[in-house]
Length: 197
Image 1 (cartoon, helix red, strand yellow):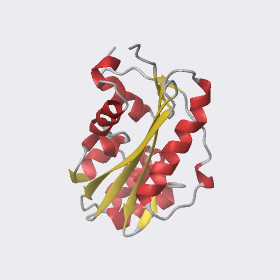
Image 2: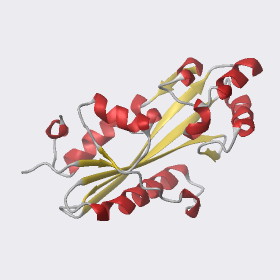
Image 3: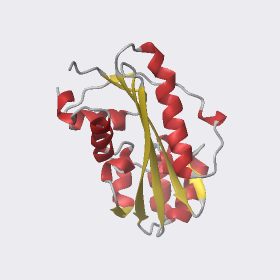
């Protein structure tokens, strides 16, 4: 069986780095899908739907490939949080999040364009945030990192200083659950080691 190229339908450098860490060198094709078109109030359903649309937007460009679409949101106190709109929104969020916990949901869509098969799943990880002073919150937001991330924090950056612990999949919080990817590849008939470079 020939192994198709692995395509990441995302501009996220963090997702690309995760794949590279486990020996997968993806072709990066950001979907540029307009996420504002999708309005769903249930976080797992929202991220699965967005992930699928992103993968489906890129899939027609490839006759034979595996296309991975992902999307992440933080569910906190019953509200869904994607990337903050600006610094003041990020500060307001952190003032509520600090000392509390939220659920980070990531949707994963994997399309095998050769076999015309699509899998869509989601993963959730509980994230506990450290108590923080206003000074620390403002300093963190000033780095610019939280403005690029769902939930206004990056576990692989400065944000790791302010995450006390997580329950569940670590890589899911960064934007792509590696164990779930392995399972999805197996379900499609591939071994993750087939994609090692």
